Length: 171
Image (spheres, rainbow, N blue to C red):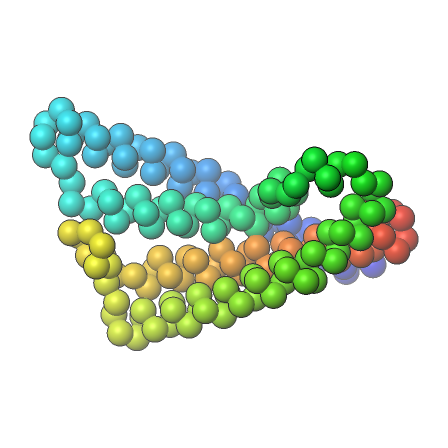
């Protein structure tokens, strides 16, 4: 049990660390967008790189932050139904939906994300959306990393839920 607690605590620490990193990425994105708005509307000289940075940072923030959100158990659910259930029924539902939906979904997307990251690196893919045209493999790799963090945190939460459901105490 001591090893399991330490392992789950380590996974939590990864999610917390990545969540802190994401908070700085949000600030960075706000500064970049504000900078471009000032250049665009005050000086009439927009940047060519802001759009690419914004969608890459935005996507990275969403995916990297998902593990932290899951650690805090702040993900979206249908609370009008869920809140009416007993704690035991909530645990049962969480376990069931994690097995049926969350694990297959995250694993499936992770497999595709890893393939895309490797492919982007091999072919030296670049963005075709904006004018700057940066390489895509770093962004595609961050997508895979965010999904790995989400999968690890999902596994940690799942183990805790199963333990709580069986033994009636927190792990």
